[in-house]
Length: 89
Image (cartoon, rainbow, N blue to C red):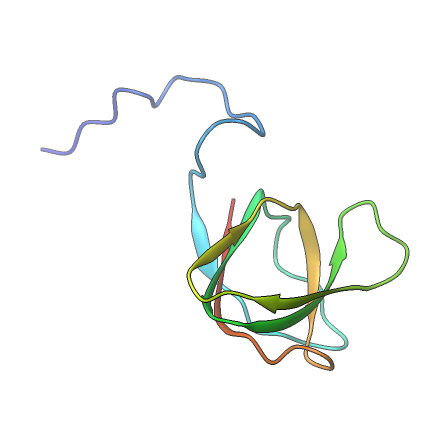
C-alpha cells in the first residue's frame, strides 16, 4: 500500500517537486505547466523563457545531470542542443 506522509503538506518553491514531465523543445509552444526547476540529462546550451520573462535567455554549456533552479514557461528548439530535459513541478 502506497503512503505519502507529505500529502497534506503545502507546496511551495522551496519544497521538492511533486511531479515531473519530459520536455520537448519548441519554438512555438509553451510547456504544459511552469516548472520549479529543470533537469538536464545530456548537457549543452539551453534557450528558455522564464515565467516572468519577456525575452529568451541562453544558458551556455550546461553540464549533463544538472538541475537549474529556474521557473520556466518555454524551452526553445532554436539555440538548444541539450537534450533529455525533464521539467520538475
